[in-house]
Length: 214
Image 1 (cartoon, rainbow, N blue to C red):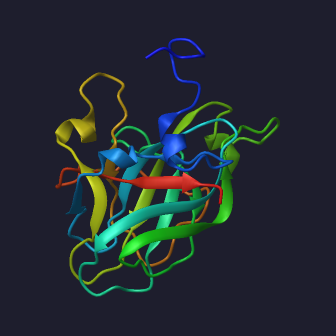
Image 2: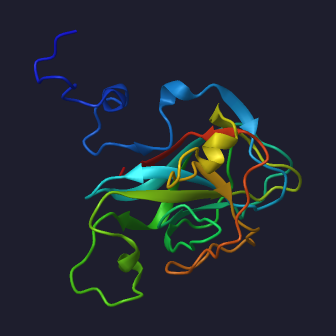
Image 3: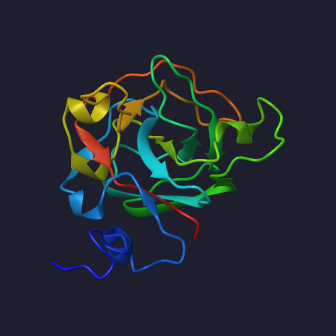
């Protein structure tokens, strides 16, 4: 089709489908790619980390995801964590944002961060300060969904995927999903490191995760 602005659309299609919010949402996958509701894992409070690209100037206050079926008996110490990247066996990442403990429910879960994550570097920030983990450039954040159940993980609205989603096919590709070691019922502190003990998920899915300002 002919386009008024040239070869490419002037507006992102996903933004149009989101209802044209004044602050665009950032997401792990397209909503149209959701084709399964699969269990993320078996162990209680194993962080399932999902890659979400963010843009310069984004202000992130909420993490939203969908649960089709809760598994086991829900506790009240589930939470979400936003990391400065996707942790790998050779690179630790920093906690940029975290929510208070809460109880996840079936359906949409919109979880508030305790303080906003702003994607913008700050001039003159001392080394090792939290903001030093956020460059003044686009960034791929790692978003961890940490569940408190007595048995298995929940069924998430997600896209089915194979091992290539976890590892990538080409050198330098960022994994779309991974797992970190088990966390307890207390959210980590902002500025803490995740460490580098990571594993690939045992099930092939990429959950639909949305970051938003409001």
